[in-house]
Image 1 (cartoon, rainbow, N blue to C red):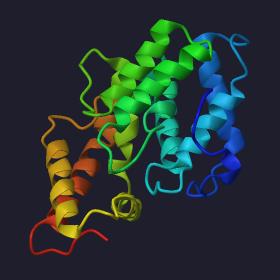
Image 2 (image 1 turned 180 degrees about the vertical axis):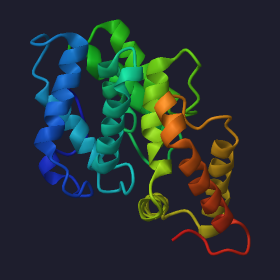
Image 3 (image 1 turned 120 degrees about the vertical axis):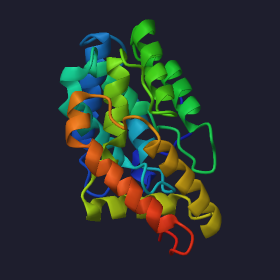
Image 4 (image 1 turned 45 degrees about the vertical axis):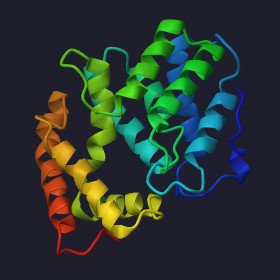
Length: 236
């Protein structure tokens, strides 16, 4: 797999105590589930390339901790998916390319999947589906009959339903990733994102997400938006 990403040994350490071996094993299982066990080239270089990307030192929220959380939520929601392994691969690729100052991260991540997965032995239709799911994370607005899209989007947004301390850590990490944005501009941009999310008829599309996460997530978003309102202090 061709990459300009530094090897894992030289990457940042913002994933905390994440178990790299366990994550490699999870990638191999998902890849083999999509392509068939024992088919295609050695999956480990592909896993290591992705792990290195997720460990880039400029990341503060979009780290291995986020990847692990999304994978865990996909596991939790897999009964709602048509092809859980394709959704898992989409989780691996959905922020594989991430530069906070760029607006085309999802598109570039999708193109990475389109290049890497066929090379790794994934059938063309499944590789295309992974890329489609990655692009869907721009809007987090899957169609009513898009079961795989609903699972990925719910898994990606599940952080919004975190307990108060974890939600505060999430918002602080997002602010750190955008450290180069002045406070007023960040407040305006973040508020627009929060209003867009609150304007969705439903944040979560799976029955589980609607039942377990919707109310808490809306409360958290509303509280953050109130904090960012004029006259309040900006996010740390």
